[in-house]
Amino acid sequence: MSGFTRDSRYYGDRLVYEALLSKWSRYHARCRCGNNWITQHAEPAGFTVVRRGSGFVALTGPGLTEDVDESRLTANALWEAVTGEKGTQAWFEPVRTIDRSEKAEAARKTAAPRPNRQPQARTTTTKNEPITDKQLRYLTTLITKASKDRFNAEFAAAIKGTTVKPRGPQERTMQAVKRLTKPAARKLITGLLT
Ligand SMILES: [Zn+2]
Image (cartoon, rainbow, N blue to C red; front, side, top):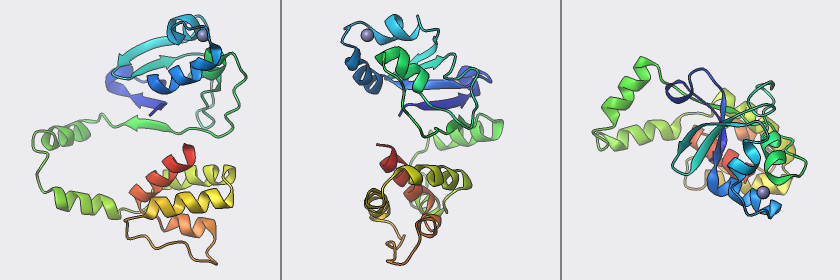
């Protein structure tokens, strides 16, 4: 998934935008130049490639990750460089921060070699975790962009197969959202974004 990321292992303290290549190549199809969008558009527009991974490229640059208000992040600057059209993204993206503290890294190391260690117990805990404050804030923004029907459809899809009860006929949107579990909230966010 494309998105704004902080990961001290790869980027130091820089904010970067990790662009999903399949998605951005599709956006670039609007341009019809047939060239590589990174070297032909992104770099000439002032963006810098700071890392290439499998399927994504991490970029920094003006209006994207530099000179920006971090509570109002959009990919409009890159969109304009790549498509030649004005960016119209009106919702703001969150920053995904990868925790590289010693504690988090140690936890990752112990978890990695033995993926089958108590899988049931682990899943159950995560499954029932309540929606986080960050998710709640983000959903508050996303909901204002979605129609009532769209929201209801995505809500129903997000809670499918979970213990979260369907939205009641009189229940207000935010009441329903507050009842979500962390994974269901994540699913709802993804649903509303696509
Ligand atoms: Zn082009």
